[in-house]
Length: 106
Image 1 (tube, one colour):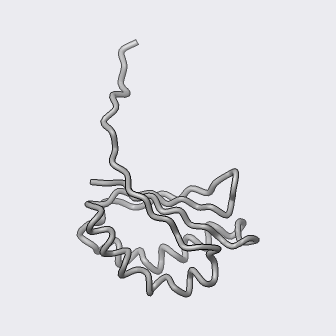
Image 2 (image 1 turned 120 degrees about the vertical axis):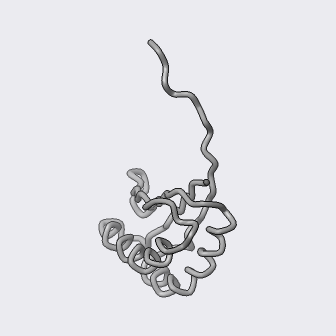
């Protein structure tokens, strides 16, 4: 399992509409993503306090390879969405969780 982190860059002036815009994006690609065998769980959406035009979406996925396949299939579906709302293409990064021990006896 990996964690996918997508960074979306909204056009200037759309920051206050981030919730509506990201909901629209999820309605475009969510059904395909949720039915993909690589899907593990729903994403979380985080809007930057320092730069409210930047929205991060993070979610677990089965593997980088399976995610890259679905990302390629999503691109045509997101084309008009990106023209309407995005200042630049989304950035996708992949992370592997480190098993840091966080339970301590104090």
